[in-house]
Length: 97
Image (cartoon, rainbow, N blue to C red; front, side):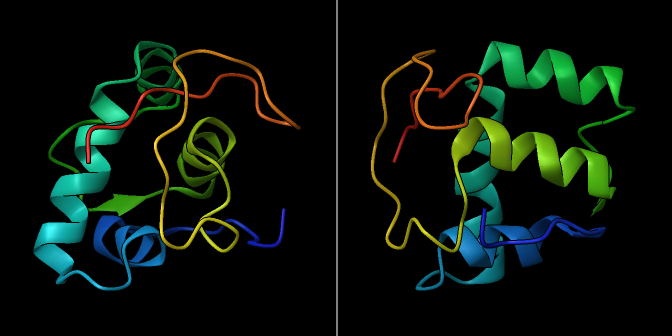
């Protein structure tokens, strides 16, 4: 993983995945990906995630990266298969782009 997770705003993480987007559009797209991945949502909720929070804790950022892939290595993002383990990720979920 090239990106070292730390606490950050949802919009900051979203812009790493969608650098061509505005913060609002990027956040909406990222959250659509996150919410469409049941294993990721389960782990995020166990880590204290709530839909209304604006700041993601480093553990939550790590979970998102583990499931969706490293944002630094995936520009632009590509659709990936649902729940198929690939190179270091536990689950990869289908993204809606």
